[in-house]
Image (cartoon, rainbow, N blue to C red; front, side, top):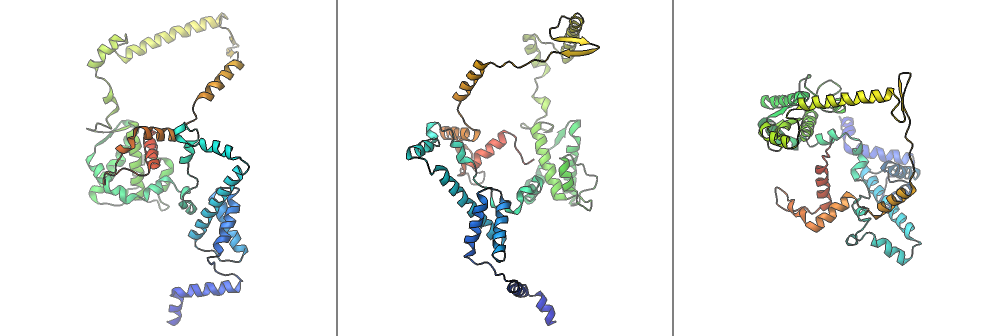
Length: 383
């Protein structure tokens, strides 16, 4: 009984680790070893900003000094500090030989009120977040989104129950997936049937279906909701009685409203009439082309042994035109979309219109807010 308790007590592992370290001539890390880790990280960061080489350099330095490895968070913080030191050293080396006048001219490039060309550099992150050490960058976006499944469940079941999703024939599987989730919510069942429709990306299907062949409910529902969101944006799926996500052909003018407009533009009254006219015109032009080709009337184009031969068009270099193009290009301001959004926001104050739905307060992080606006404007999602 005593031996059983000895094996399970937490102090046993610590005691054995201390004995093993003493036997191999190693020691546990102490506070003063942080300087060693930062110095090794700084040397590695002088050549790369990548996390793995910097962490590897720290581990190698500790092992060469016969020091046991500390917690991963300690190595992480030392790597970030060493990389920051390396950045500062590189910056000092870059301006070491510059005069005060030259330094002043460089600083002027970053003054936004003077039409800065390099102001956008202020918005570029100088380092990745600390979570990258834990290989989050290698995770699939679906897995990351699935971690927020509890938040998704707060509103997704109600949306699925209330909204009526419709689609054309090409997106029927998407609506079937939504109907399946609606049935699962109504019945209280947790298991997704093996023949459930999977309209989302193929690489996500391998994540949704486990090694045992069972479908992961959390990932399946997350993938389906993301897929439906993208389909709503593209117009392949619509919501009945919705003003924002209507059926695509509902945006068209009615036949009665379009008739006078088409008559004023001298357009055919139906698509069949227009297609018939285009077909007749294309047939006439092809016959004319064939006639000219058989009589050798097409410059640079011949029919030899039943094969069409076309003389290649060679690029003609125009020095004056190229010089003018370079001059015009040099007059254009060098500005990025991030800097443009900052300039518009500072001039109009439109960011004040974006407030928190719960608190009503404005956002203090303008960079994050502008990034969200840009992502929404370009339909940039996690997919």
